[in-house]
Length: 160
Image 1 (cartoon, rainbow, N blue to C red):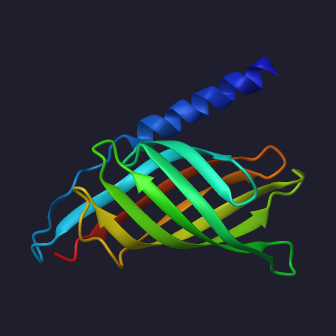
Image 2: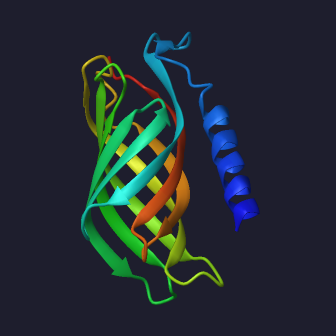
Image 3: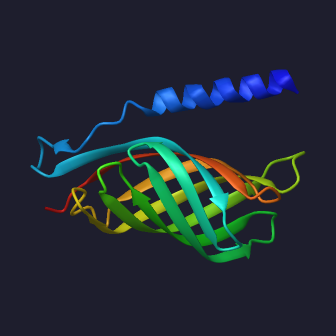
């Protein structure tokens, strides 16, 4: 048990260190739009069946989420629709509408791997103009213990 916890802590630290290479918005030479390289990790906790909150490292410092639908697909997978609110350390924010696909992890009841496709619907406070842009995340969720670990990444461009 102790060794598993040590390995888990080391793996989490390694993910955190690899996520801290995030770039801040910079001018894109090709079209003059601001480019934002998104990357990081997060720990997410269920408040109830539809509300989640989390801490993050990387581009974002915190997040909240609302699950709008959670539909079984007949093959053991689920499809969910969500809204996320991401907050950066400088109070910049991005709000997204999302689709999540969950796949059961063999041998681990109530544990699913997932991928989320995010679409920015609103942004502001220094992260202005990214509406319509997309990025992704992957992770694991333990529905029995109401926790998830996520790694998000992508490149988005401002519309301004």
